[in-house]
Length: 287
View (cartoon, helix red, strand yellow):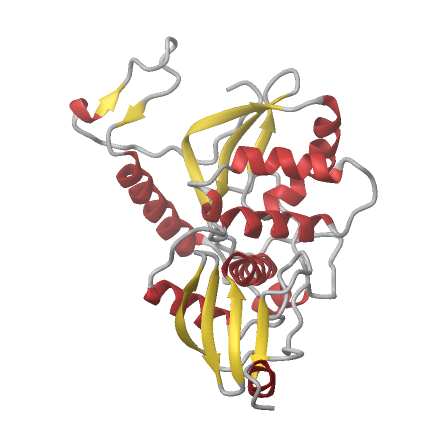
C-alpha cells in the first residue's frame, strides 16, 4: 500500500465458507463466493454514507460544463466533479432535426433488419446501427450529467499495451475515467483496471480499449470523448445476425423514435431506409 491512502475501511462479516483466503500467496486478495451480492451490499452502504455526508450538489454547474475526472474518482458518483476546461457545446443536439414517426413492428429480416410500418410507408431499420445511435446519445447525456454507470471489478484485471498505445493511454487516461474506466500503471507497459463502464461489464472491454488506442494513435481525430462514446456504443449494441423477439424490436424502435439524430448511427451510416407509398406503388406498377 506504499503511496496509497485509503479514504475508508469497510468491515464485511461473512460465513467463513463463503470466503476463499488462499487465492493469493501473500493474502493481499480474497475471493467471495457470491461476489455480486457482496459488491451490491458495499455499494449501497457507501452510497448511503456519502449521500448523508456529502453537500447538496449544484445542478446548474453540471448542465453547463464538463467536469474533469478527479484522480480519486471511484465507482460511485454522488456529486459533480469540478474541472478547469469546460466545454460549452454539447455533443447531442437539444432539438431533433428530423424526428422519426411512431412505427409498428412487422418482423425481422435476415436477423439484422427490423421491418416496420409507418404512417407514410415501409421502414427498414438496421438494428445494430439504430442501437448504436440510442446508446451513443445515452452515454453522452450520462457523461454530461456526471451519471455514467460504473461497475467495479472485485478482481482487478491487467492488460499490456504496445509503445504507441501506451503513449495515447497516458495522454487520455482522464478522458477514459470520465466514462467509468479506472486504469492505473502496473509495471512496464502493463496497466491495472479496477472498474469499467457498467455497459461494457460483460463485453470485451479490453479489446475495445486496445482498438480505441490503435485508432487514435494515427494522428488527428475527432474529439477524444466522442470517439470513446462511439466505441462504447458500437461494442455494446446488438449485433447484425442476432435474432430479436417482437418485444425487443418494439423496445428498440421505441427508444430510437425520440433520438436527437435517429436517421444515422454515430459513424454517419444510415439507420433507417424508408419506402413511401408512392415508391411502393411504382414498384408494383400502380403509379
